[in-house]
Length: 247
Image: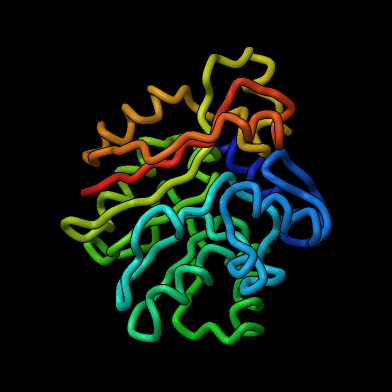
């Protein structure tokens, strides 16, 4: 399937999710279900309550909890959705820091901006953009975070190269993402629902880690969640991989 078609499938799907419709394996449902999903992938009750409706039950981990985020730092969230991880990061960096969220779905950007106003986050900014071509200056970011999004991008090497470009020297990246434990069939790889559901475009774990290194970043696996396969993905051969990558 051509890259542009994949992007249109993803963009259309998450535009619907932002509007309260559409589902995927990453999460879907009412607020109670979204909270249960968030708890199962590593968010605390306090974190879930603090972000309110920004938690759409999407994701496969908690990137803001994977490494230390310091007061005054500039954070970039790749695929920021309704702003959940951005708002958690904003609390960590404080008024002297800044968080930028980038998402390709206009509906998600609008929802995130509305949530920021609702909850009074003044140190968070949301930008419409493609994570394969970030609307971010070179060497301007202390920490890049991403939660179950890079698997949706057709050119994952380009995403990690872009992350390296925008990171300051010594900057770090905390990523939670879906990776495969064995190959999918061609039919599964080309299934629109599986593509939008964080599965169809996922890479094998070793290939994913190789791409990070190829992009010029040093990868360190922090943890692996194989149980997510049965909890959220109907037993498909995958796991949630938590990785720290440094420039």
